[in-house]
Length: 100
Image (cartoon, rainbow, N blue to C red):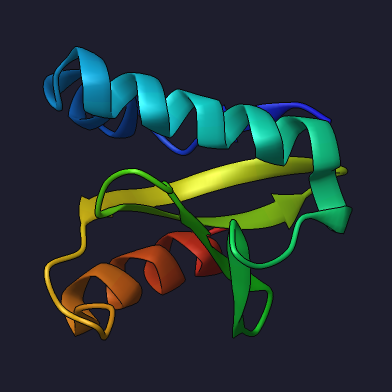
């Protein structure tokens, strides 16, 4: 399965994390690429309505994604600082999802 990014800003954000954290994020993205629809906890969980959270295991970085046209599409990326996903991050991902 291929993994795509909604826009360049997501890639820029990941790259801005520094070598260690960005490397960890890309390893997690590769798990999504390898397992596709079969990915599950602790790497990914459903947020409902076709939206999923991809968890970078060695950092607090989260990627929100959907399955779109037989590929994964990452809609948003952020550093999670609380137990709950910030509403603005979830809203942004849902807004992007609604444009597809």
